[in-house]
Length: 182
Image: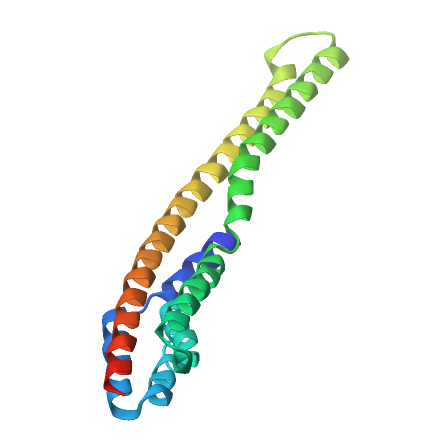
């Protein structure tokens, strides 16, 4: 749960109004050039601002280098957004297995009780069966809750990814326009 909550918070803080950011960067390029645009990016949180900043760092090397930098750094930002998802997937997969392990342990306890009592009465078997059912339910509930969080996180990453790609294309266009004016 901690990983899921951390990822949700990270992604929530990663969301940026990219249209507003792009307008601010374009205005800064017009007004103060590359350094002013870098300042706007430094003062804005989120992966899109970081990608723009990396592109601006290499603005003097040409638009092709800026574009390659944006693509490369976009991959870095995607990795940062996906950080920890493999652990969530592991816990989603292992929670039911741990529940079923509890089922087996509960059944062993039930059979031990039967063996010790020499009788198969419901009272003898009930304790082991209770353990078996509780652990199974627990494992399934954990897996279902984590699966919901996982899918939500993946949907947020997809939305941020599309926003990053769209903004990066518009940023490169803005850099081409800026270079033509120079």
